[in-house]
Image (cartoon, rainbow, N blue to C red; front, side, top):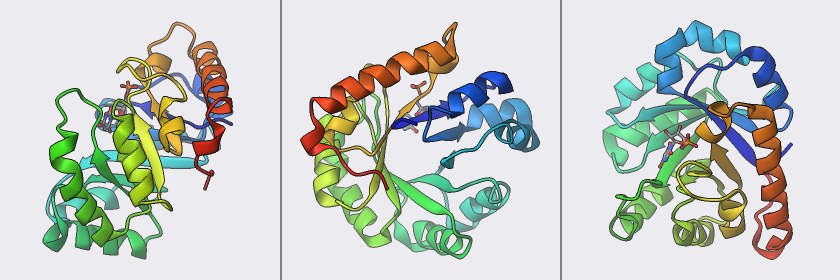
Length: 222
Ligand code: BMP
């Protein structure tokens, strides 16, 4: 086990996935994978392994009824789903949160993206208000904005923070955890590698080394 979540945006063979799963906290299922192999294909793929957490990242940013209809298609497979916070509360996140609470599914809200064009200074304060109102299970904060991981950890000490942007997008293993994230999300650096299992093991070594040197600020595992 490690503090990694695999972003699965492309199918990989189930033997490799099984071996990877032994070293992962969880898996994040992306829309490209669902479009490639369908919902049944995803269910098949996931059945190879025991997961600490299965997160569906359906890029939810819509009115409540559409988000609920979307989540209802995968609800038996999902421990958690991710939605955008910017869509606001009334008629959007309020209805989604009610539905998820009724079905025992965790909600993560995006507090800061990882892409270079994300204007964290402009958006963080606004999103923080919405996040406080909805009181989700956790937050998504890009690993490429460590300052905002620190702010989110300070503002939301009890939330699980998951952080994409490790590897191809430029952040190094352990960076986000040392800034206050609970788990780090990695995709292409693993599933596009010639040897995904070796690549993951090497990233876990880097993550552990980094965490050992910063352990005073590291958040507890939930
Ligand atoms: P990769 O390690 O291949 O860059 O994958 C990162 C994953 O996290 C992708 O599934 C991407 O859609 C997602 N993601 C991200 O990279 N930045 C964000 O701000 C939010 C995301 O969901």
